[in-house]
Length: 358
Length: 192
Image 1 (spheres, rainbow over the protein chains, first blue to last red):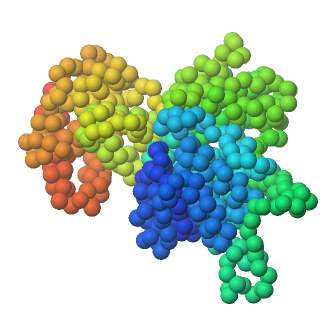
Image 2 (cartoon, chains in turn blue, cyan):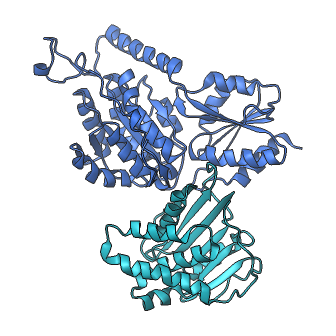
Image 3 (cartoon, rainbow over the protein chains, first blue to last red):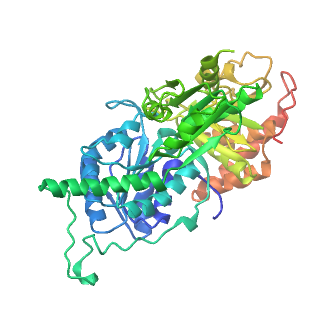
Protein backbone atom coordinates (compact mmCIF):
# COMPACT_ATOMS: atom_id res chain seq x y z
CA UNK A 1 0.00 0.00 0.00
CA UNK A 2 1.27 3.43 -0.83
CA UNK A 3 0.37 6.90 0.30
CA UNK A 4 -3.26 7.98 0.48
CA UNK A 5 -4.33 10.15 -2.45
CA UNK A 6 -7.55 12.13 -2.71
CA UNK A 7 -9.11 10.95 -5.95
CA UNK A 8 -12.36 11.02 -7.83
CA UNK A 9 -13.91 7.56 -8.24
CA UNK A 10 -13.73 7.64 -12.03
CA UNK A 11 -10.04 8.56 -12.08
CA UNK A 12 -9.26 5.99 -9.40
CA UNK A 13 -10.97 3.27 -11.47
CA UNK A 14 -8.76 4.18 -14.43
CA UNK A 15 -5.61 4.16 -12.33
CA UNK A 16 -6.57 0.85 -10.71
CA UNK A 17 -6.90 -0.82 -14.11
CA UNK A 18 -3.45 0.36 -15.15
CA UNK A 19 -1.99 -0.88 -11.88
CA UNK A 20 -3.76 -4.20 -12.40
CA UNK A 21 -1.72 -4.60 -15.56
CA UNK A 22 -4.45 -3.74 -18.05
CA UNK A 23 -3.02 -1.63 -20.85
CA UNK A 24 -5.90 -1.79 -23.32
CA UNK A 25 -8.86 0.54 -22.90
CA UNK A 26 -11.53 1.15 -25.51
CA UNK A 27 -14.41 3.43 -24.70
CA UNK A 28 -16.96 5.97 -25.77
CA UNK A 29 -17.62 8.90 -23.41
CA UNK A 30 -20.87 9.22 -21.45
CA UNK A 31 -21.78 11.07 -18.25
CA UNK A 32 -21.28 10.32 -15.35
CA UNK A 33 -18.10 8.37 -16.10
CA UNK A 34 -16.35 10.35 -18.84
CA UNK A 35 -13.47 11.19 -16.49
CA UNK A 36 -12.24 7.60 -16.80
CA UNK A 37 -11.57 8.14 -20.50
CA UNK A 38 -10.23 11.63 -19.87
CA UNK A 39 -7.80 10.24 -17.30
CA UNK A 40 -6.75 7.22 -19.33
CA UNK A 41 -6.29 9.13 -22.58
CA UNK A 42 -3.19 10.53 -20.88
CA UNK A 43 -2.27 7.74 -18.45
CA UNK A 44 -2.47 4.61 -20.63
CA UNK A 45 -0.17 5.83 -23.44
CA UNK A 46 2.24 6.96 -20.71
CA UNK A 47 2.22 3.37 -19.35
CA UNK A 48 2.87 1.98 -22.84
CA UNK A 49 -0.70 0.86 -23.54
CA UNK A 50 -3.50 1.63 -25.97
CA UNK A 51 -6.30 4.13 -25.47
CA UNK A 52 -8.85 4.15 -28.23
CA UNK A 53 -12.04 6.15 -28.40
CA UNK A 54 -14.39 4.08 -30.52
CA UNK A 55 -17.10 5.38 -32.83
CA UNK A 56 -19.83 3.90 -30.65
CA UNK A 57 -20.41 1.59 -27.70
CA UNK A 58 -21.35 -1.22 -30.07
CA UNK A 59 -17.90 -0.94 -31.62
CA UNK A 60 -16.31 -0.84 -28.17
CA UNK A 61 -17.74 -4.20 -27.22
CA UNK A 62 -16.35 -5.84 -30.35
CA UNK A 63 -12.95 -4.21 -29.88
CA UNK A 64 -13.01 -5.76 -26.41
CA UNK A 65 -14.01 -9.10 -27.94
CA UNK A 66 -11.10 -8.92 -30.38
CA UNK A 67 -8.49 -7.96 -27.82
CA UNK A 68 -9.72 -10.48 -25.24
CA UNK A 69 -9.88 -13.21 -27.89
CA UNK A 70 -6.27 -12.47 -28.73
CA UNK A 71 -5.36 -12.96 -25.07
CA UNK A 72 -4.89 -9.33 -23.96
CA UNK A 73 -6.09 -7.80 -20.71
CA UNK A 74 -8.73 -5.30 -21.74
CA UNK A 75 -11.49 -3.23 -20.21
CA UNK A 76 -14.03 -0.55 -20.84
CA UNK A 77 -16.20 1.81 -18.83
CA UNK A 78 -19.57 3.25 -19.66
CA UNK A 79 -22.89 4.21 -18.17
CA UNK A 80 -26.34 2.68 -18.50
CA UNK A 81 -27.41 3.55 -22.09
CA UNK A 82 -23.88 2.77 -23.26
CA UNK A 83 -23.96 -0.63 -21.56
CA UNK A 84 -27.26 -1.37 -23.37
CA UNK A 85 -25.44 -0.85 -26.66
CA UNK A 86 -22.61 -3.11 -25.52
CA UNK A 87 -24.95 -5.88 -24.43
CA UNK A 88 -24.97 -7.70 -27.76
CA UNK A 89 -21.19 -7.89 -27.65
CA UNK A 90 -21.27 -8.98 -24.02
CA UNK A 91 -23.39 -11.97 -24.99
CA UNK A 92 -20.93 -12.91 -27.76
CA UNK A 93 -17.89 -12.43 -25.52
CA UNK A 94 -19.43 -14.59 -22.80
CA UNK A 95 -20.42 -17.30 -25.29
CA UNK A 96 -16.88 -17.35 -26.67
CA UNK A 97 -15.51 -17.49 -23.09
CA UNK A 98 -13.28 -14.44 -23.25
CA UNK A 99 -12.15 -12.63 -20.09
CA UNK A 100 -12.77 -8.87 -19.99
CA UNK A 101 -13.83 -6.21 -17.51
CA UNK A 102 -16.81 -3.89 -18.00
CA UNK A 103 -17.48 -1.01 -15.62
CA UNK A 104 -20.99 0.45 -15.49
CA UNK A 105 -21.31 3.73 -13.56
CA UNK A 106 -25.08 3.75 -13.53
CA UNK A 107 -27.27 6.76 -14.28
CA UNK A 108 -31.04 7.07 -14.10
CA UNK A 109 -33.16 5.37 -16.74
CA UNK A 110 -34.96 3.98 -18.63
CA UNK A 111 -34.19 5.59 -21.96
CA UNK A 112 -31.82 8.52 -21.80
CA UNK A 113 -33.16 9.07 -18.27
CA UNK A 114 -30.88 11.45 -16.42
CA UNK A 115 -27.26 11.70 -15.44
CA UNK A 116 -27.63 11.36 -11.67
CA UNK A 117 -26.93 8.20 -9.63
CA UNK A 118 -29.15 5.15 -10.00
CA UNK A 119 -29.12 1.39 -9.50
CA UNK A 120 -31.63 0.76 -12.23
CA UNK A 121 -29.36 -1.64 -14.15
CA UNK A 122 -29.45 -4.43 -11.56
CA UNK A 123 -31.51 -6.71 -13.81
CA UNK A 124 -29.43 -5.82 -16.86
CA UNK A 125 -26.21 -6.69 -15.05
CA UNK A 126 -27.29 -9.80 -13.18
CA UNK A 127 -29.94 -11.34 -15.42
CA UNK A 128 -28.65 -10.69 -18.89
CA UNK A 129 -29.03 -7.50 -20.85
CA UNK A 130 -27.90 -9.35 -23.93
CA UNK A 131 -29.49 -12.53 -25.26
CA UNK A 132 -29.02 -16.14 -24.32
CA UNK A 133 -28.06 -18.06 -21.21
CA UNK A 134 -25.15 -16.08 -19.90
CA UNK A 135 -24.09 -14.47 -16.65
CA UNK A 136 -21.54 -11.90 -15.64
CA UNK A 137 -19.71 -11.92 -12.36
CA UNK A 138 -21.01 -8.62 -10.95
CA UNK A 139 -19.31 -6.67 -8.16
CA UNK A 140 -20.81 -3.55 -6.53
CA UNK A 141 -18.44 -1.14 -4.74
CA UNK A 142 -19.65 1.14 -1.92
CA UNK A 143 -16.61 3.43 -1.79
CA UNK A 144 -13.85 4.70 -4.03
CA UNK A 145 -11.36 2.47 -2.21
CA UNK A 146 -13.53 -0.58 -2.77
CA UNK A 147 -13.98 0.34 -6.45
CA UNK A 148 -10.20 0.36 -6.80
CA UNK A 149 -9.83 -3.04 -5.14
CA UNK A 150 -12.66 -4.57 -7.17
CA UNK A 151 -11.20 -3.32 -10.45
CA UNK A 152 -7.84 -4.82 -9.52
CA UNK A 153 -9.25 -8.26 -8.68
CA UNK A 154 -11.69 -8.18 -11.60
CA UNK A 155 -8.97 -9.02 -14.12
CA UNK A 156 -7.74 -12.24 -12.48
CA UNK A 157 -11.35 -13.23 -11.78
CA UNK A 158 -12.27 -12.72 -15.44
CA UNK A 159 -9.32 -14.91 -16.38
CA UNK A 160 -10.14 -17.53 -13.74
CA UNK A 161 -13.60 -18.02 -15.27
CA UNK A 162 -12.83 -16.93 -18.83
CA UNK A 163 -15.92 -14.77 -18.46
CA UNK A 164 -16.56 -11.02 -18.41
CA UNK A 165 -16.68 -9.36 -15.00
CA UNK A 166 -18.79 -6.26 -14.42
CA UNK A 167 -18.19 -3.56 -11.83
CA UNK A 168 -21.58 -2.01 -11.12
CA UNK A 169 -21.33 1.37 -9.40
CA UNK A 170 -23.87 4.16 -9.14
CA UNK A 171 -23.02 7.65 -10.42
CA UNK A 172 -21.86 8.83 -7.02
CA UNK A 173 -19.11 6.19 -6.88
CA UNK A 174 -17.69 7.75 -10.04
CA UNK A 175 -18.21 11.37 -9.06
CA UNK A 176 -17.18 11.54 -5.41
CA UNK A 177 -13.65 11.94 -4.11
CA UNK A 178 -12.30 9.87 -1.25
CA UNK A 179 -8.80 9.08 -0.07
CA UNK A 180 -7.50 5.95 -1.78
CA UNK A 181 -4.51 3.71 -1.43
CA UNK A 182 -3.59 1.56 -4.39
CA UNK A 183 -3.03 -1.96 -3.12
CA UNK A 184 -0.22 -2.95 -5.44
CA UNK A 185 -0.13 -6.44 -3.90
CA UNK A 186 -3.39 -7.09 -5.80
CA UNK A 187 -1.54 -6.77 -9.08
CA UNK A 188 -1.44 -10.11 -10.87
CA UNK A 189 0.32 -11.44 -13.92
CA UNK A 190 -1.96 -12.36 -16.82
CA UNK A 191 -2.65 -16.09 -16.99
CA UNK A 192 -1.29 -18.23 -19.80
CA UNK A 193 -3.91 -18.16 -22.54
CA UNK A 194 -2.03 -20.18 -25.15
CA UNK A 195 -4.40 -23.14 -25.00
CA UNK A 196 -7.43 -21.18 -26.17
CA UNK A 197 -6.64 -17.61 -27.30
CA UNK A 198 -5.57 -16.51 -30.78
CA UNK A 199 -2.22 -15.45 -29.44
CA UNK A 200 -0.29 -16.26 -32.63
CA UNK A 201 1.20 -19.62 -33.66
CA UNK A 202 4.81 -18.47 -33.60
CA UNK A 203 4.68 -17.91 -29.82
CA UNK A 204 2.87 -21.14 -29.04
CA UNK A 205 4.50 -24.53 -28.59
CA UNK A 206 1.61 -26.33 -30.26
CA UNK A 207 0.30 -26.87 -33.78
CA UNK A 208 -3.34 -26.71 -32.64
CA UNK A 209 -5.10 -23.67 -34.10
CA UNK A 210 -7.20 -21.88 -31.50
CA UNK A 211 -10.63 -20.71 -32.58
CA UNK A 212 -12.59 -18.14 -30.54
CA UNK A 213 -16.24 -18.20 -31.58
CA UNK A 214 -19.82 -18.04 -30.39
CA UNK A 215 -21.52 -19.85 -33.29
CA UNK A 216 -22.46 -23.50 -32.65
CA UNK A 217 -24.90 -24.70 -35.31
CA UNK A 218 -24.82 -28.30 -34.13
CA UNK A 219 -27.45 -28.52 -31.37
CA UNK A 220 -25.33 -30.91 -29.35
CA UNK A 221 -22.31 -28.66 -29.57
CA UNK A 222 -24.38 -25.62 -28.51
CA UNK A 223 -25.87 -27.54 -25.60
CA UNK A 224 -22.37 -28.63 -24.63
CA UNK A 225 -21.15 -25.01 -24.70
CA UNK A 226 -24.07 -23.94 -22.51
CA UNK A 227 -23.28 -26.73 -20.06
CA UNK A 228 -19.69 -25.48 -19.86
CA UNK A 229 -20.96 -21.96 -19.15
CA UNK A 230 -23.40 -23.24 -16.53
CA UNK A 231 -20.64 -25.16 -14.78
CA UNK A 232 -18.67 -21.90 -14.51
CA UNK A 233 -21.63 -20.03 -13.02
CA UNK A 234 -22.11 -22.84 -10.49
CA UNK A 235 -18.43 -22.54 -9.62
CA UNK A 236 -18.82 -18.78 -9.11
CA UNK A 237 -21.64 -19.52 -6.68
CA UNK A 238 -19.42 -21.95 -4.81
CA UNK A 239 -16.27 -19.84 -4.70
CA UNK A 240 -16.91 -16.14 -5.19
CA UNK A 241 -19.88 -14.91 -3.18
CA UNK A 242 -18.86 -11.82 -1.19
CA UNK A 243 -20.85 -9.66 1.20
CA UNK A 244 -20.52 -7.49 4.30
CA UNK A 245 -22.62 -7.86 7.45
CA UNK A 246 -23.31 -4.82 9.63
CA UNK A 247 -24.90 -4.99 13.10
CA UNK A 248 -25.95 -8.54 12.33
CA UNK A 249 -24.85 -9.83 15.74
CA UNK A 250 -27.62 -7.75 17.34
CA UNK A 251 -31.17 -9.04 17.77
CA UNK A 252 -32.44 -7.03 14.83
CA UNK A 253 -36.14 -6.62 14.15
CA UNK A 254 -35.56 -5.54 10.57
CA UNK A 255 -33.01 -6.83 8.07
CA UNK A 256 -31.99 -4.38 5.34
CA UNK A 257 -30.40 -5.67 2.15
CA UNK A 258 -28.73 -2.84 0.25
CA UNK A 259 -25.66 -2.30 -1.93
CA UNK A 260 -23.43 0.47 -3.29
CA UNK A 261 -23.89 4.08 -2.16
CA UNK A 262 -27.40 3.27 -0.91
CA UNK A 263 -25.94 0.81 1.60
CA UNK A 264 -23.84 3.61 3.15
CA UNK A 265 -26.96 5.68 3.74
CA UNK A 266 -28.53 2.60 5.32
CA UNK A 267 -25.46 2.10 7.53
CA UNK A 268 -25.86 5.59 8.98
CA UNK A 269 -29.58 4.89 9.52
CA UNK A 270 -28.69 1.64 11.32
CA UNK A 271 -26.26 3.55 13.58
CA UNK A 272 -28.81 6.26 14.39
CA UNK A 273 -31.59 3.77 15.09
CA UNK A 274 -29.30 1.76 17.36
CA UNK A 275 -28.84 4.85 19.54
CA UNK A 276 -32.62 4.90 19.93
CA UNK A 277 -32.61 1.22 20.91
CA UNK A 278 -34.02 0.02 17.59
CA UNK A 279 -31.87 -2.78 16.20
CA UNK A 280 -31.57 -3.20 12.45
CA UNK A 281 -29.25 -5.57 10.60
CA UNK A 282 -27.67 -4.63 7.29
CA UNK A 283 -26.48 -7.10 4.73
CA UNK A 284 -24.54 -5.61 1.83
CA UNK A 285 -23.92 -7.87 -1.15
CA UNK A 286 -20.53 -7.05 -2.68
CA UNK A 287 -21.20 -9.54 -5.46
CA UNK A 288 -24.65 -9.24 -7.05
CA UNK A 289 -24.01 -12.32 -9.14
CA UNK A 290 -23.30 -14.69 -7.52
CA UNK A 291 -25.77 -13.46 -4.90
CA UNK A 292 -25.35 -14.23 -1.15
CA UNK A 293 -28.42 -16.47 -1.19
CA UNK A 294 -27.77 -18.65 1.83
CA UNK A 295 -26.59 -15.75 3.97
CA UNK A 296 -29.79 -13.80 3.31
CA UNK A 297 -31.95 -16.89 3.87
CA UNK A 298 -30.26 -17.55 7.23
CA UNK A 299 -30.25 -13.88 8.30
CA UNK A 300 -33.97 -13.52 7.56
CA UNK A 301 -34.74 -16.64 9.57
CA UNK A 302 -33.21 -15.23 12.77
CA UNK A 303 -35.83 -15.34 15.58
CA UNK A 304 -35.78 -11.59 16.25
CA UNK A 305 -36.20 -10.68 12.59
CA UNK A 306 -39.75 -9.69 11.71
CA UNK A 307 -39.33 -8.27 8.24
CA UNK A 308 -36.77 -7.95 5.45
CA UNK A 309 -36.47 -4.88 3.22
CA UNK A 310 -34.50 -4.29 0.05
CA UNK A 311 -33.50 -0.64 -0.24
CA UNK A 312 -32.17 0.27 -3.65
CA UNK A 313 -31.97 3.13 -6.14
CA UNK A 314 -34.39 1.36 -8.45
CA UNK A 315 -38.09 0.64 -8.59
CA UNK A 316 -37.65 -2.82 -7.07
CA UNK A 317 -35.15 -5.08 -8.80
CA UNK A 318 -32.87 -6.66 -6.19
CA UNK A 319 -35.97 -7.19 -4.05
CA UNK A 320 -36.93 -10.05 -6.38
CA UNK A 321 -33.68 -11.84 -5.55
CA UNK A 322 -34.19 -11.15 -1.85
CA UNK A 323 -37.70 -12.64 -2.04
CA UNK A 324 -36.24 -15.66 -3.81
CA UNK A 325 -33.73 -16.14 -0.99
CA UNK A 326 -36.12 -15.55 1.92
CA UNK A 327 -38.51 -18.12 0.43
CA UNK A 328 -41.57 -16.77 2.21
CA UNK A 329 -40.13 -17.18 5.72
CA UNK A 330 -40.56 -13.43 6.39
CA UNK A 331 -42.39 -10.62 4.63
CA UNK A 332 -40.10 -8.91 2.10
CA UNK A 333 -40.58 -5.20 1.42
CA UNK A 334 -38.98 -2.69 -0.92
CA UNK A 335 -38.08 0.97 -0.74
CA UNK A 336 -36.30 3.04 -3.35
CA UNK A 337 -36.02 6.17 -5.39
CA UNK A 338 -34.97 6.29 -8.99
CA UNK A 339 -34.81 9.82 -10.31
CA UNK A 340 -31.29 10.63 -9.21
CA UNK A 341 -32.02 11.74 -5.66
CA UNK A 342 -30.57 9.52 -2.98
CA UNK A 343 -32.74 8.98 0.10
CA UNK A 344 -31.28 10.50 3.28
CA UNK A 345 -30.61 8.44 6.42
CA UNK A 346 -33.65 10.18 7.96
CA UNK A 347 -35.90 8.83 5.21
CA UNK A 348 -34.50 5.32 5.63
CA UNK A 349 -35.07 5.53 9.39
CA UNK A 350 -38.72 6.49 8.85
CA UNK A 351 -39.24 3.71 6.33
CA UNK A 352 -37.63 1.08 8.54
CA UNK A 353 -39.39 2.03 11.78
CA UNK A 354 -42.78 2.15 10.04
CA UNK A 355 -42.38 -1.52 9.10
CA UNK A 356 -42.74 -2.80 12.64
CA UNK A 357 -44.73 -0.05 14.35
CA UNK A 358 -43.87 0.73 17.93
CA UNK B 1 -17.56 13.19 15.43
CA UNK B 2 -18.54 14.23 11.94
CA UNK B 3 -18.62 17.65 10.31
CA UNK B 4 -20.05 18.62 6.94
CA UNK B 5 -19.16 21.74 5.01
CA UNK B 6 -21.06 22.96 1.99
CA UNK B 7 -19.53 25.33 -0.55
CA UNK B 8 -22.03 26.90 -2.93
CA UNK B 9 -22.09 29.57 -5.62
CA UNK B 10 -22.03 30.15 -9.37
CA UNK B 11 -20.32 27.70 -11.70
CA UNK B 12 -16.91 29.19 -12.44
CA UNK B 13 -16.36 30.61 -8.94
CA UNK B 14 -14.06 27.77 -8.00
CA UNK B 15 -16.55 26.17 -5.62
CA UNK B 16 -15.47 22.61 -6.34
CA UNK B 17 -11.81 23.51 -5.96
CA UNK B 18 -12.32 25.12 -2.54
CA UNK B 19 -14.04 21.98 -1.34
CA UNK B 20 -11.36 19.78 -2.80
CA UNK B 21 -8.56 21.69 -1.07
CA UNK B 22 -10.44 21.49 2.24
CA UNK B 23 -10.92 17.73 1.76
CA UNK B 24 -7.22 17.42 1.04
CA UNK B 25 -6.32 19.24 4.27
CA UNK B 26 -8.60 16.92 6.25
CA UNK B 27 -7.06 13.84 4.65
CA UNK B 28 -3.53 15.05 5.41
CA UNK B 29 -4.57 15.50 9.03
CA UNK B 30 -5.63 11.87 9.13
CA UNK B 31 -9.40 12.25 8.95
CA UNK B 32 -11.78 10.22 6.83
CA UNK B 33 -13.20 12.44 4.14
CA UNK B 34 -15.68 12.44 1.27
CA UNK B 35 -16.03 15.18 -1.35
CA UNK B 36 -19.20 15.20 -3.36
CA UNK B 37 -19.84 17.59 -6.23
CA UNK B 38 -23.22 18.70 -7.46
CA UNK B 39 -23.10 17.29 -10.90
CA UNK B 40 -25.88 17.93 -13.32
CA UNK B 41 -26.56 19.54 -16.65
CA UNK B 42 -25.01 22.89 -15.68
CA UNK B 43 -22.75 25.38 -17.41
CA UNK B 44 -20.65 28.37 -16.45
CA UNK B 45 -22.88 30.78 -14.56
CA UNK B 46 -25.20 28.01 -13.36
CA UNK B 47 -25.31 26.82 -9.77
CA UNK B 48 -22.50 24.76 -8.32
CA UNK B 49 -22.06 23.28 -4.91
CA UNK B 50 -20.06 20.62 -3.20
CA UNK B 51 -20.18 18.92 0.15
CA UNK B 52 -17.16 17.89 2.17
CA UNK B 53 -17.75 15.37 4.95
CA UNK B 54 -14.98 15.03 7.54
CA UNK B 55 -15.00 12.40 10.25
CA UNK B 56 -12.73 10.52 12.62
CA UNK B 57 -14.38 7.21 11.66
CA UNK B 58 -15.43 5.65 8.36
CA UNK B 59 -18.11 7.80 6.72
CA UNK B 60 -21.49 6.17 6.22
CA UNK B 61 -23.96 8.22 4.27
CA UNK B 62 -22.29 10.73 1.96
CA UNK B 63 -25.73 12.25 1.48
CA UNK B 64 -26.25 15.08 3.96
CA UNK B 65 -29.53 16.84 4.63
CA UNK B 66 -28.22 19.40 7.14
CA UNK B 67 -24.58 20.50 6.79
CA UNK B 68 -22.69 21.83 9.81
CA UNK B 69 -21.31 24.85 7.93
CA UNK B 70 -21.95 26.80 4.74
CA UNK B 71 -19.79 28.98 2.52
CA UNK B 72 -22.20 30.92 0.29
CA UNK B 73 -20.59 32.72 -2.63
CA UNK B 74 -23.80 34.05 -4.19
CA UNK B 75 -27.29 34.98 -3.06
CA UNK B 76 -29.30 32.07 -4.54
CA UNK B 77 -26.99 29.67 -2.66
CA UNK B 78 -27.48 31.48 0.62
CA UNK B 79 -31.24 31.56 0.21
CA UNK B 80 -31.38 27.90 -0.72
CA UNK B 81 -28.99 26.37 1.80
CA UNK B 82 -28.78 28.68 4.87
CA UNK B 83 -32.05 27.39 6.35
CA UNK B 84 -30.60 23.85 6.41
CA UNK B 85 -27.37 24.62 8.28
CA UNK B 86 -27.15 23.02 11.72
CA UNK B 87 -27.40 25.22 14.76
CA UNK B 88 -24.11 26.94 15.76
CA UNK B 89 -22.57 26.37 12.34
CA UNK B 90 -20.42 28.93 10.56
CA UNK B 91 -22.13 30.61 7.61
CA UNK B 92 -19.76 32.64 5.47
CA UNK B 93 -21.58 35.15 3.29
CA UNK B 94 -19.81 36.72 0.31
CA UNK B 95 -21.10 40.24 0.97
CA UNK B 96 -19.62 41.53 -2.30
CA UNK B 97 -22.41 39.74 -4.12
CA UNK B 98 -24.97 39.12 -1.38
CA UNK B 99 -26.94 41.96 0.14
CA UNK B 100 -28.89 39.93 2.72
CA UNK B 101 -28.03 37.92 5.81
CA UNK B 102 -28.91 34.34 6.68
CA UNK B 103 -31.73 35.59 8.91
CA UNK B 104 -30.89 33.14 11.69
CA UNK B 105 -29.85 33.81 15.26
CA UNK B 106 -28.42 30.37 16.04
CA UNK B 107 -25.49 30.42 13.66
CA UNK B 108 -22.11 32.12 13.47
CA UNK B 109 -22.72 34.40 10.52
CA UNK B 110 -19.83 36.28 8.97
CA UNK B 111 -20.24 38.72 6.15
CA UNK B 112 -16.99 39.03 4.23
CA UNK B 113 -16.65 40.78 0.85
CA UNK B 114 -14.47 37.98 -0.52
CA UNK B 115 -14.84 39.02 -4.16
CA UNK B 116 -13.74 42.59 -3.40
CA UNK B 117 -10.85 41.31 -1.31
CA UNK B 118 -9.79 39.06 -4.19
CA UNK B 119 -9.87 41.99 -6.63
CA UNK B 120 -7.79 44.07 -4.20
CA UNK B 121 -5.35 41.18 -3.77
CA UNK B 122 -4.87 41.02 -7.51
CA UNK B 123 -7.26 38.57 -9.18
CA UNK B 124 -11.01 38.19 -8.87
CA UNK B 125 -10.67 34.49 -9.64
CA UNK B 126 -9.08 33.81 -6.28
CA UNK B 127 -12.25 34.77 -4.38
CA UNK B 128 -12.78 31.08 -3.60
CA UNK B 129 -9.39 30.93 -1.89
CA UNK B 130 -10.13 34.10 0.12
CA UNK B 131 -13.34 32.41 1.29
CA UNK B 132 -11.50 29.20 2.11
CA UNK B 133 -8.92 31.05 4.18
CA UNK B 134 -11.61 32.94 6.03
CA UNK B 135 -13.68 29.82 6.67
CA UNK B 136 -10.80 27.76 8.05
CA UNK B 137 -9.56 30.69 10.16
CA UNK B 138 -13.00 31.23 11.69
CA UNK B 139 -14.17 27.63 12.12
CA UNK B 140 -10.78 26.34 13.27
CA UNK B 141 -11.84 22.94 12.01
CA UNK B 142 -8.48 22.27 10.45
CA UNK B 143 -4.91 23.43 10.75
CA UNK B 144 -4.13 26.63 8.87
CA UNK B 145 -0.54 25.65 8.16
CA UNK B 146 -1.74 22.42 6.56
CA UNK B 147 -4.13 24.52 4.49
CA UNK B 148 -1.18 26.62 3.31
CA UNK B 149 0.63 23.44 2.26
CA UNK B 150 -2.40 22.08 0.42
CA UNK B 151 -2.93 25.31 -1.50
CA UNK B 152 0.69 25.09 -2.56
CA UNK B 153 0.12 21.48 -3.65
CA UNK B 154 -3.01 22.41 -5.59
CA UNK B 155 -1.14 24.96 -7.66
CA UNK B 156 2.06 22.99 -8.11
CA UNK B 157 1.40 22.61 -11.83
CA UNK B 158 0.15 26.17 -12.19
CA UNK B 159 3.07 27.93 -10.53
CA UNK B 160 2.24 31.31 -12.04
CA UNK B 161 -0.99 31.42 -10.01
CA UNK B 162 0.50 30.31 -6.70
CA UNK B 163 1.58 33.71 -5.30
CA UNK B 164 -1.78 35.33 -5.97
CA UNK B 165 -3.61 32.46 -4.29
CA UNK B 166 -1.26 32.43 -1.33
CA UNK B 167 -1.95 36.14 -0.91
CA UNK B 168 -5.68 35.47 -1.22
CA UNK B 169 -5.51 32.82 1.50
CA UNK B 170 -3.78 35.19 3.92
CA UNK B 171 -6.18 38.00 3.03
CA UNK B 172 -9.11 35.74 3.92
CA UNK B 173 -7.53 34.90 7.27
CA UNK B 174 -6.86 38.57 7.97
CA UNK B 175 -10.44 39.54 7.10
CA UNK B 176 -11.73 37.26 9.86
CA UNK B 177 -9.61 38.93 12.50
CA UNK B 178 -10.85 42.35 11.39
CA UNK B 179 -14.56 41.71 11.45
CA UNK B 180 -16.44 41.94 14.72
CA UNK B 181 -18.31 38.92 15.95
CA UNK B 182 -21.60 40.46 14.92
CA UNK B 183 -23.99 37.82 16.09
CA UNK B 184 -23.60 35.35 18.89
CA UNK B 185 -20.08 34.31 19.76
CA UNK B 186 -20.71 30.59 19.65
CA UNK B 187 -17.48 28.78 20.14
CA UNK B 188 -17.15 26.38 17.29
CA UNK B 189 -15.63 23.26 18.70
CA UNK B 190 -12.84 21.74 16.72
CA UNK B 191 -13.05 18.13 15.65
CA UNK B 192 -11.85 15.80 18.33
